[in-house]
Image 1 (cartoon, rainbow, N blue to C red):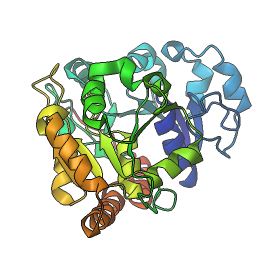
Image 2: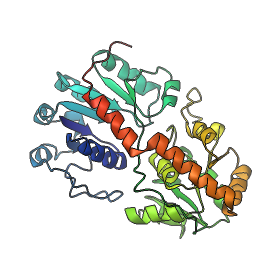
Image 3: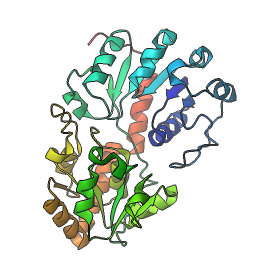
Image 4: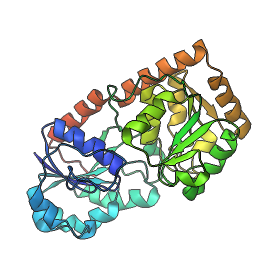
Length: 340
C-alpha cells in the first residue's frame, strides 16, 4: 500500500507516519517529513524512513491546495490531517482514491458542514475522541482511533524535580485558547517550567523548544503536570505524553475545559479520563488548582499511586500497540462509507 499523508502538525505527523511504516505501508508525508532524514522542525527527531526524492521534488512549492497530479497518482490511499480546504481544493484530482480525513480535535460546526457532502461522495472520517460527537452538525465517523504514545519511550516518572510542568507551543501568545492566564496565576510561587516555542517570553522559567530527550527527562522529573488544554481540543499530545510518563496531573475541569466560544460543543474529554484514574485532579478555579498542585507536590504514597494509575490508563487508551492494530485493521478495510 502507498499512502500519501497530508500534514499540518509536525508532532502528530512524526508519530503517525512512523506507525504506518511499522505496518509496512509505503508513506510519503507532505509536511515536515517530506524528507524524513532532514527536517527543519526540531520538535521531534528525524525518522529512518524511505526518502521519495521524486515526490519531494514535485512538492517543493509547499502548496497543499494544488497538489501535483503525479503525487496523487502515486498513492493508493490519501490521509488528510484536519484541513478540509485541502480536500476541497484537490477533490477532483482524488477521483478513484481512498481518501481519509484524520480529525485532530480542531473541528467546529463549519468543518463538519464541509465534510458532509464529501462524505456522501466517499470520504472516510477517522475521529480521535468520542466527544467530537457533541460538535453541531457532526458529520459521522468511520473509525475512532486515538493519538498514541509508546510506553517503552515514555515512563519512569520520579518527580524528583518537584516543579510544575507544562508543554505548550506559544502558550502566552495564544492566551485564551490555551488558558495561559489561568496557568500563570495558578502556578505563581511554585517552582515551574514551561516548555514550547514562545515559552521563553515568560522569563527564566520558560525554556522554549528543547531537545526531545530533554523534554522527556523533564516529564520524568516534574512534581506535577498542570494541563490547561487547547480549545477546542478534547486532549492534546502533551497531555498523553504526561499521562504515559506517569506524571500526576492537575487539569481543567468540565467547565473551564470546554471552549466558551463554542458553548454548544462539549468536546473536552480529560474530565472523562479523570473518572478512570486517581491521578488526575480537576480544577475550575485558581484556588482549587493551587490546592491540587500543593497536595501533589507534598508527595507521599497517594502520589505514587496516582502515577501508577495514570500510566495504566495511558497504556489502555493511548498505548502504541493497540492504536497500531486499529490503524492496521482500518487501512486494510477497503469499504466505502454510505451517506450518513
